[in-house]
Image 1 (tube, rainbow, N blue to C red):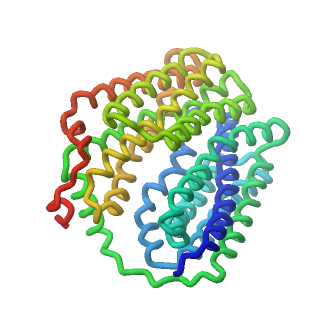
Image 2 (cartoon, rainbow, N blue to C red; image 1 turned 135 degrees about the vertical axis):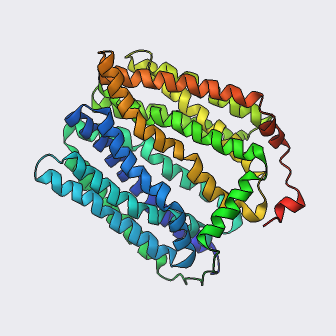
Amino acid sequence: MEKTKNNFYKFLLLWVGEFISSIGGGMTSFGLGVYVFSKTGSATAMTMVTLVGFLPTILLGAPAGVLADRYDRRLLMMLGDGLSGLGVLFIFLCMLQGNAALWQICLGVGISAVFSSLMAPAYRATVTDLLTKEEYAKASGLVSLADSARYLISPVLAGILLAVSDMKLILGIDIATFFVTVAVTAVVKKGLVTKKQEEVSGFTQALKEGWQAITIKKGVLNLVLLASVMTCFMGFMQVLCEPMILSFCDSKTLGIAETICACGMLVSSLMLGMKGAKGSYVRMLWLALFGAGIAMAACGVAENIVLICIAGFLFFAMLPFANTALDYLTRTNIPVNLQGRAWGLIGVISQLGYIVAYVLAGVCADGIGKKMQIGVGRGAAVVIIIAGILLSVTALFIINNQKIRELERGDVSESENNFS
């Protein structure tokens, strides 16, 4: 397919659709969390919904990527976006009949997540199809902005809507966004010739080659395992922050607080984008993780929304620095011809920590709250403090890890680059 200037406008149209979809999905995610907690008073119930929505990303990410390499990517996007709306519609219909049960919400969220997983790799690959290499950096920034909209914009909008209406309004808005995204994808698809995709290696072989790529150097494997530990501790913060705040604030305040906290990530991302990163990436990594752990622990110290917003802002501000260091140290030490397969496997392994957090977080918060007779909100706070301290302690191990420090050189030998 010939890449022309007009294709960037097609990308912008596609991006607008995904930006709107991200806001709608983020509002539904926020609203359902508030709804479930208000009905059950249980952190376990909230984390169950989060887990059901996240599992398909792990289980179906690699197969969805294979489909994106073999079939019409725009058609996959239309199917993924359109069919994922069925899950939201199911929850909406259940609520019209009265209060939706937890199993109904989980079923709807699961259906939506399965088809959304189908769409994600096709969307990323379509950006490559449409644009030239010179346009990738600009497009990458816009894609990141659309992804972050669910954390920067959705919470405050959903909080305001819940203050004046109920969950059905949010679900109705989200359903409407599916029509928008399918329509703009159809417009982009029209006039584009679908290129014949190259045959890809088998799934098992791709996994084997990806595993070899990240085990050539022990430092890379250590980083991948470290990333999994990071996501585990951060997952506790992600799912328990809402019940912690809702125990003493309303949904509107929660939405505003989440948006303020997420702005920390936006500020540091812009800083890195303008000035770049200088100095030792290993040092940047451990300092960012240590700081994130301290800020995370501070979030649970007291039922003070100002303190939580400040600590949360600092926590999210640390994440881009940690992610940049992890990305650089890993990317520069993996053979070029194996980057795709390696990153696919890295994505799965590094996010396993979230699964552990989502399974344990709610149970721990409810259990501690009941055992100490402090309520689920403070129980969640205790878990967040413990996870934050453990994250900071984990960061200290990086300082003396010689295998990770050796990655700073970022050299990949010719034999490593061609071992497969």
